[in-house]
Amino acid sequence: MAADQPYRTAQEATEAFARHINPGKVAFFSELGLDLIPGERGGVRFSDAYSGRSYLNCHCNGGVFNLGHRNPRLIAALRGALDDLDLGNHHLISGWRAKLAERLAETTGGRLPGVVFGVGGGEVVDLALKLARGHTGRTAIISVSGGYHGHTGLAVATGDAQYRDPFGPNLPGFVQIPFNDLEALEREIEGAAAVILESIPATLGFPLPEPGYLRGVGDLCRANGALLILDEVQTGLGRTGTVWYYQQEDVEPDMVVTGKGLSGGLYPIAATLMTAELHAFFVARPFVHLSTFGGSELGCVVALEVLAITTEPGFLERVLGLSERFRAGFEGAPFELRRRGLTMGFKFPRPNGGFEAMRELIGGGLFAVAANHDPAALQFKPPLITSDEEADEMIGVVRRVLG
Image (cartoon, rainbow, N blue to C red; front, side):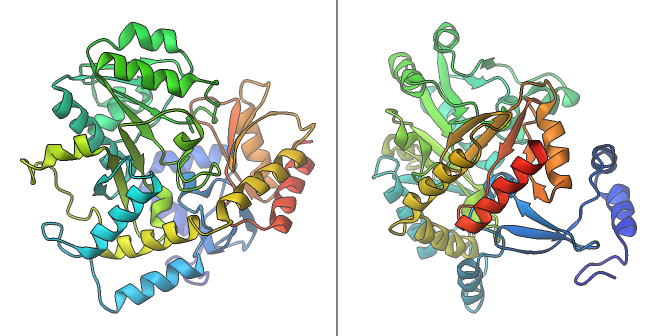
């Protein structure tokens, strides 16, 4: 048996996974030639549990591991909290929950002082959409074609048809438009409750917003009485060189959704940040939305340390410096580099180039994932704590494998 693994062989583990978890995933990975079961992990690397082969992680599970695998400071915070804390009680006042909400509000300069916690991104997106409908008295929601906001009820209604059509017709009132298309938005926005979009859509391979696009979306929302919800689950928490990507654009969202990286890869936690006006909705309805595990006190302790690291002097400047290092390293590479900080996408000229590159890079010891809604693109997201030497190693693998 491999160390710290419940099955003796990779085949036994794979067969059990197919039998009880998801046989379709096993078949898909087999077609890709991907027989990878994560075992030992730390920093920017993880190893296969059975072969021992090491991989540079340039996907980070969508940003969950922004601060690397098993970050020592985050582990120390969680271990210390376990001496005194548990989940807490979601009905009662909690200083830990309040402190995390206060720190999140500070990262927005006080623009979004209200916070509602959840466990994962889909849950807090659902809350944002419910609140938009409750606050405006409208039902229509506009999202971006090829975007992704989760698999829960309202969140999946904003996403790609492949995730919702198997369960029956979509909920009424949900409309999708192309990214970077203000004219399409203007045609649909009258009477809408909200527009929700990823600041830089991940599953489309991180196409960058055109100059003025996000500002234009915000202006159309204001003019038509709709709310602007920005999903920063993947672009937030320092990944683009500012705590939130919207801070690089001339736009003021009504709500921002965060998750993944807030957990530090150790304890699930997510949040919807909102204006004071929206937060007032809960004054007369204090129990209108509840989440038993949302804002767990253990999760709050980890998330507070995530914010402490992310906002330390020099941290965000370091992210931007690394971004420039990758830009220089990828000059002349056979793909278009889309880049904001360490949010990067490779766009290939071949229709299936993203999946081809994914297979080749994993074979070369670098884990990156194709953009599911644009097979010609690849997501490339190294941890924010990557050293210069590790960055050069990643660049070297990409140049060697992809040419």
